[in-house]
Image (cartoon, rainbow, N blue to C red; front, side):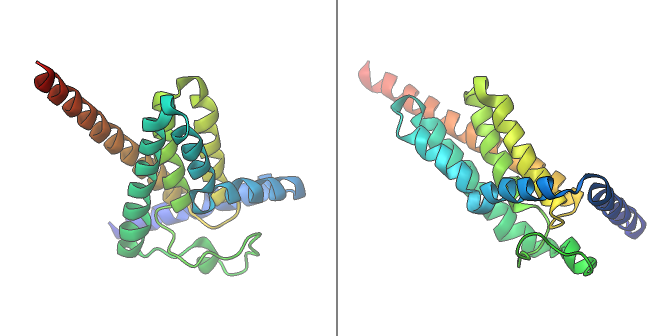
Length: 190
């Protein structure tokens, strides 16, 4: 198990070095800072959810998106980060000059990625016409965390998995509540 973790850590480090050595430029630096800021506090996802909630046709989708965001935040930031307590790449490799403020929380899983994929999973399910753009934005936010050297690749992969799991749980729970409500309304109106 220890050998496996060591191998994963070396792979994580190699991928970060590859990104740093092959992709960094002034334009990309500025672009990735903007992209990552969209994920700060889930702001872009909250804005999209709010716009959906004010539209009666998409209100349930907006509430599901917020539910997925809350669940992702509780599980990722509130539980997993404190259980795993993985330090960030900048703590492991202090010579790296970060382009953004050094995050204070633990690294695993990536909160930006978890929240992005939790909401994107819900939105992609119900707004199929926009699913490529939505999942593309979530992927860009996830990649920005690697580019900016604040997460390891395994943090981001775990965030994608946890986020999509949260979206699935919220979608399933919402569908059960809707079906329950519809079944009970039929019984009452008979």
